[in-house]
Image (cartoon, rainbow, N blue to C red; front, top):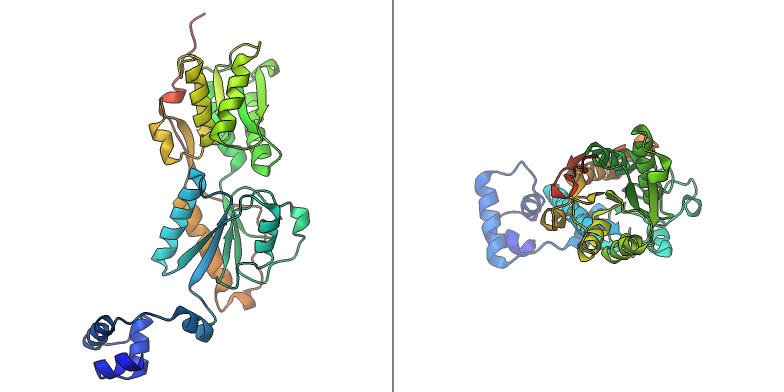
Length: 339
């Protein structure tokens, strides 16, 4: 900064004001300083800035799997929303590992970031207790580690209920729920399926919940292939708990000569970009990822503000719901045969 100040003929304080975006600098002075910054190739020393201000300008985003499209698209939404606020996002992949998630909740990323957005997958509430972390933290998604931590996501039960109700409206009656597991997401989406089937007064004999270990294409393919190889009647609808499972299901149905949607209608949750390009295009519940990112960053910045200590810890909330919508495509446009 001293070099830039000498080159521009201004004080070091003026250079600091320009670099920091301080509003009360005349346009001519700002232009002269910026020209010197560019000519000398000045770059901000973020480490030194952080030592002075106590803020790094970074937030950490921890998600289970970057290779899974939903989490990659969520990360992109957070990065874009943060960039509009002048914040840089550091992305961590936890692989859904309980110990990694526990380490992050214990402050394992706060040495490099001002706050943490965590999408947990496996960490149980019992591992966390009721203590509020001493750093800004917002949970993303439907997995809860306690209502004392602020969390942003969609109403998972309502989303599943909406997808299944759509299949029922198309005439489906023997609908497979594909994806039950021990995760909180799995339990919630199973509950949404059951509510929709009960509300439609579908006979219990036609309720079929198929468990899987992971919500992947391979698991979706294997589960549906096993179902088709069995002795039971063919389902007329498949509700996959996420789009990855649905993509695997579509592949298995096609490989077995089952027509979608003529024989079996398919719907799922996430509306990843791939959903519009499957064969046929996939009906899916679309969470508003931009709304999730913006609301999560709002909550994080509120905790990191100078007034946060006076305001006290964030108010408990089971989840701050964000919008979702049903995107209807060809995969669910099913009509049952007459008679």
